[in-house]
Length: 527
Ligand SMILES: C[S@@+](CC[C@H](N)C(=O)[O-])C[C@H]1O[C@@H](n2cnc3c(N)ncnc32)[C@H](O)[C@@H]1O
Image (cartoon, rainbow, N blue to C red; front, top):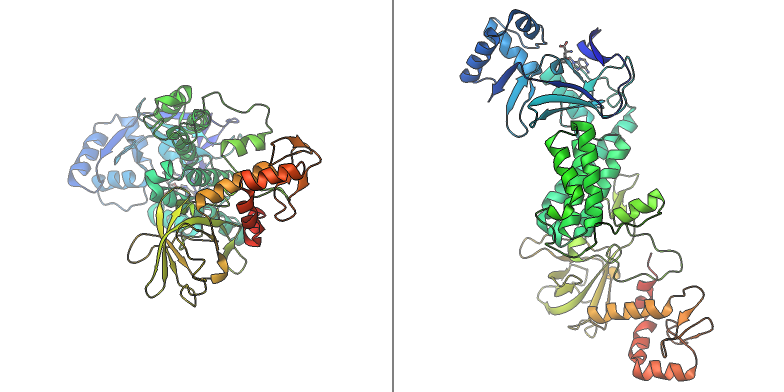
């Protein structure tokens, strides 16, 4: 499949002598010399010398021909220099390294076409084609963790290996290179955000967390890298879905993870075996069912969808509202819970985009809803707010008037606040909450959050036209020729008699007054 060749300016390297398809195992090699612990320690130096001296003549010669960028004055220093230049990991977790006569000849590229890996099950170093490799193409792996910027990569490669990388990624025009760096940085930032959410991200705000994995997968796809991080995004998505009892999505994510592990590490790698087993029976995952939020059966997968619609289903992407369609106040993308709000100090890609001037601006609309549980004015108005998840958070008014812009009649326990573009703020003292600065961005509605959501359900039930018909709010019949309530325009009736029933018996008298409020009507027309 490959031959060792000398390449000008790059030393000896492995070159494909036939086309190698994606996922092919290019080599599988046993260690020649193993190194347990830091290469500089006396114990390890001794052990390296003993192992080299115990080698047969041809193996010893092969070892000594390996690349060494470190100067040396004696045999021991020469051996150590080789180990420092070319050794590869020989343990899944830990610092055991080893010398492999062929794998240690593989050159580096930041857009490597092959993936190296220590396979703990077969105790061999393996290299797999990450994409199709053409005949005559050099086989490359990456010597670095792959999410570093071009500048960071170049500096480490120069310092540790003594060369300048000229791969495709490092040769991009400045603008494209910055784009690529931004994507890599974004994947890393999402990793951090996911870590920060921890178990809360799995159980309390799974929708937000799955958005992050979805975004990571999309970034890897644009970047054209299907490596460990790519597989991890599917592993994490599988665990998230299964923990929330969603066996259908859990199985598909586990299948995708297993497939990436198979391509990059082989079907006999512990990771591929583990995730193939998880795909066969996702309910075996230890966190299965700790929440039942997304409960599905393993075969509850929609059939006959277009691929892009299938991805929307899989990642639980909420489709943008159609023009004229009413906003749903239960939609957590437009009306997020507190846990789902962006953090004030991050540029969360779900909420913000960078403008040309380098600042960030909202990429879409969102509005936080919460019910006033308590309030007080000390040096500014402070409220205790209960959100859609039932948790309470502090809301502090740092507007010019410190909250005095609101009429006292509006600030009542049991009323609901709606705050546009709300962010999570970490106060120096007390729990995280919302620091509210712009008086234009808040409205208060004189009903509880539960009642507002119940009203939302009614508006959807009785305002929405389906197949040219609407439902009468008085008698519940469906018809094409109903008349709309002239006051609120939200509910529809067969005739005057039905309208009276709706008004007196079905609570429209109170609801109509609320729905005439242009701000509340405005919520329903949000995009
Ligand atoms: C692990 S060895 C790889 C095999 C090496 N080419 C040889 O001749 O034995 C690492 C060394 O290979 C060279 N090398 C690896 N990748 C390279 C690249 N992309 N461009 C130039 N030199 C590279 C550098 O000298 C580096 O220190």
